[in-house]
Image 1 (tube, one colour):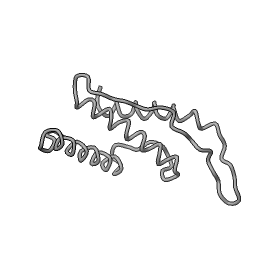
Image 2: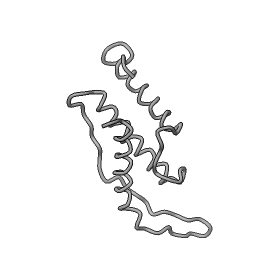
Image 3: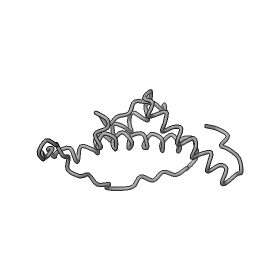
Length: 115
């Protein structure tokens, strides 16, 4: 499965999960519209079975989907989906690359070899 197709499937799955909260209507308080609070309902854990690169793609895909939903819930983005060509996707990838380099330095003494 290509990385782009995988990322699109993750976004669709996350969108369906968000539907559990979308049944609420906004509450009006004076001139402000308030959304009911949402709560984390679980934890996503990934681990490397046979290929660290595939694990990293999965973590990035779910991280991008989660970021989109968080920014949407905060009212910063109009939709919960972040396209792969969006600068936010590039920024998130930069965070993952820096994290990988930091971990490689801690465990092996040098930067990550493949980004």
